[in-house]
Image (cartoon, rainbow, N blue to C red; front, top):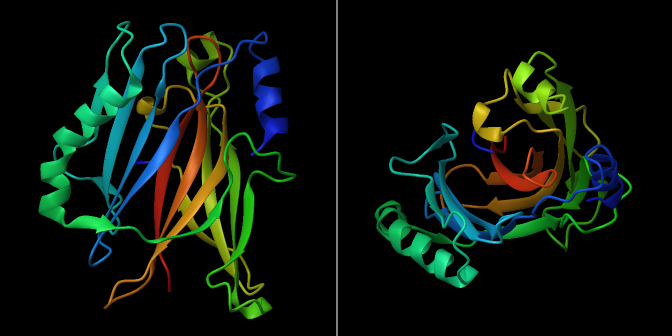
Length: 238
């Protein structure tokens, strides 16, 4: 599966002897004109080495799968170079795919919780789809729940109880409708120990249903503590 909260971060850091992993940033590249594809960039500086990395993900919104030839990953190992160099290299590699799929529509950022923000509930976000429609009927909420997957012996050997998550949506106070749930945890997540909601991005194509991308903060096993990375969950609105 392709895919703020000081209090939660403190809990994680305390469980890893006070060490801090690196924190990725994200750049929203956008949607294809029909809303069927979404791309974003994840980038930062590795803990320990100080070398830059960047990953560009291109996701089929209907199938929740990566586009062929992606993710685009640039990682300099232990070589310290400017982060901007890694980002330019990744974008140059991804450009042909972005052009082929017609990705470039920005969408609307409806809610955002950077990892440094202090929030009372990092796993719930409430928002309106339009600033001019602020009555209860137009209020949407996403709710994330963590799921324990305690049987991963590799993660246990590092002192991590692996977790997945589910995501549910409610509109205007209606009952929660589950829009995503982990059946297992892919090894590519590297022993995740916590999740939170980062961003809600909406795109309204000229024809067809509106699309949401819910970006999830994921805290995974890192060299000096939990690393913060992103997962994208696509949601087609009813």
